[in-house]
Length: 458
Image (tube, rainbow, N blue to C red; front, top):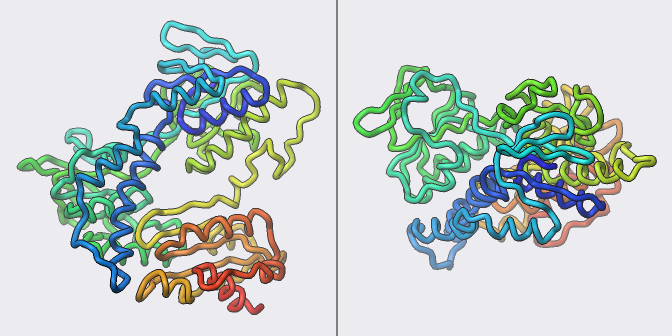
């Protein structure tokens, strides 16, 4: 039994069926989940046209217009969400041998799930993959006015005249840029000294610069204090005494695991908290090997691709344990999610793009590693062909004791496709002396790998 029919739950169920078990997927909203309808796919569909237009403007001789066509952009976005119709996803699940159960699933006891007035019992395991929900900060008046969450930001039917964005994380910066390029007047409010504060310092600086160039007003070092409705506008009072007014207010201050109303208290766990689990997904603090958690709900690495990675391991390990006999759960075996700890890749789809994997320099130092940090402007033949005046930076963090990469960050136009090579290097612990022999093709932006290794001293 899988509670939660997003991409994580779908993968758990599919892998369990592939392993010889039967599986039921319980979903109270749309099968396909947050990523398909309100996050990954619609947000990138909103961002891509603006990126294409900006890229064209950086090349002479390319005929471009002055602005995007918002109606066409929104229509294309709608096509990626299947117009919020999950019949295609349901057909896929049923075709994969998965039983789809509509309704709100709750843990009702050991291996038991209630869905409305139905009580379902799993032969082997219950997996929770309910994802996460937006976190609303305790700001005076915020519950008295209509605000946008990430869902409204990715599914709005028209462009607001003005938009205030509270929060400088991934959702905040991506949606600030998307709607600014579609014609909204956007103000981004960041409580830290830069957006994306958990990444390398130059990341937030370059992203902020890109936002400002798109007309976004970026306010840093201030936080929201109170929210009110004045003359049809949402007014946000800030900690420095100033105010921001806009037609819409996007609250993008983070997310929390969706465990508040799924019955975890019946098995001694805390509703609203992440379900802590081991690398096989087995939830800690519950008697017996029957309750698993995968995806955002466990708080390990709240990204769709990492959740699906966990899901594959969980579905496979449940099937393996059901068959009996020895089960290999050593690090880096197919039945565990070892990469969650220090090899997680992520792209922030702003312009400039941000692509990173592993540890930042600060995180590596905190982990006690003896490191060397190599920084470089991305100035290679490939980047100059991509855009006149190409602006970008790269950093690699090397564990000097093992001479392997433990972190890589790229910022710049079109750097997302560099990320998997960095991920392979980090996950595979490829020694820099061997990486030197992975010769990048000329002229591509991947030449930056050669320049990084040269700067390191090879």
